[in-house]
Every structure is written in structure tokens, then in C-alpha cells.
Image 1 (spheres, rainbow, N blue to C red):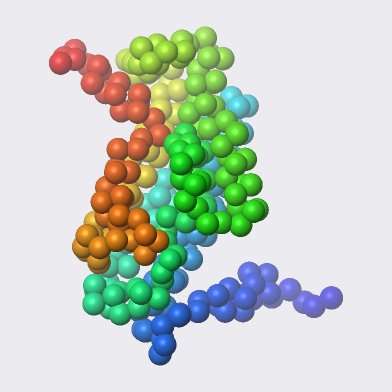
Image 2: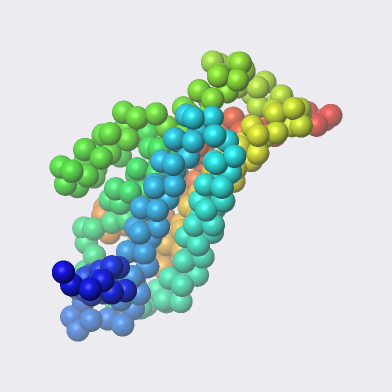
Length: 256
């Protein structure tokens, strides 16, 4: 049996062979574009791994464990946003020099990104209609659509605690109680703050990504045939936990 090394354990030769520019001759900045998006997919994989762990912890009422898991999730989210800084070291002229080679591929086709959205409760089945993916990837997405989401697990937990969450008004009232009586429900209060931070950081990454795309291509169509920035702008209000945002309106003495 071959002796294990750093390279063989991490499959470094195979990993470094995966960056294959399509421009001919290879454009200098296409390597950066490929590396950034491959790294995004690796972090998406880790995010899904951590979010699946959160779902298990919630179902087992292990809220202290979720606090640790969310600590890692938030750190990864900050890193995802920071990667935009690296991508923006490429100018529009440099990107457009190889962009035509990307047709008809598009970030819209990222299966793992859709998995994160589905897991977070944004189960938009219309997204599946436009995805050109393998049978295995489609099966993964269908499985996510059939499984309980993060919001589902959160509200199941609140039900087990004897709190009312069946209607929108009941959820707002319950969340308000958790915040206004935080010492009594401190583990739930910390969970809610982790959930809204997860939501906020995802929205911040969406916003940062949109501004980066606009900076690169203006209002051009996306490489996959989407409306580009115009389409992406429609996603900015997609919150995983809209009630957690809404309840802020009713906290404190002044609720107007």
C-alpha cells in the first residue's frame, strides 16, 4: 500500500488539474475566474455539511450545539463575501476578453447553491425547469425539496416548547415573546439571533454579488440567457426567515 502523503490525502494533483481555461490562448484572468468559482462550490459543500448538522441538532433539541455550528457557518459566509474583493481585482475589459467562451454556462446552474436555498426554505420549483443538470444532481434537488427545511425544524422545535407557531400572527407573537423575555428563553433567543445572522449574511452576499456583476457587465444578458443583473436584483428580498425580520417592528415601547 502506498504511503499516505499530504498530496495523496488531499488529492492535490487531481485538484490542480481541474483549472482548465477555455480561451485560446489562455487569458490570464480566466484562471482567477475558475479558481474563485471552484472555491465557492467547495465552500457551498461545507455550508451544506454544516447546515445538515444544524438540522440534526435542532431535531434533537441540542441548541448549544447549534450555536457552535452557526459560528462556523457565519465565518464561512464572511469568507464568501470577501471572495468578491478578489474577483473585483479583474477589470470589465479583462472579464469580457474571455466571457464569450462561457456561453451557455451560468452561475444560475449551481446545484449546491439551489440546495442551500431549498434547505433555507426557498423552495422555488420553477428554478428546476431551467436547470440543465445530471440525473443525479436533479435527484439531489428533488430530495431537498421533499425534506424538512431549516425553518420547518425551527418551528417544530418551538412547538415542542409549547409555543404557538401555526399562523403568521402566532409566529410573530411567539418571536416577540422570545425577544422580550430573552432571559426566560435565552437558548431560543440565541438561536433566533444566529438564524437572522445567517439570513442577513446570505442577503449581504447576494447584494455584493449583484454589484460585482453590474460592475463587470452592466445590464448585459447573463451567459446562460438570464436577464443578468435585472434577474439577480429580484432575489434581494428572498429572506429565509421573514418573520424574524418583521418582529423587529414590534419590539420595544414604540411599535409604530
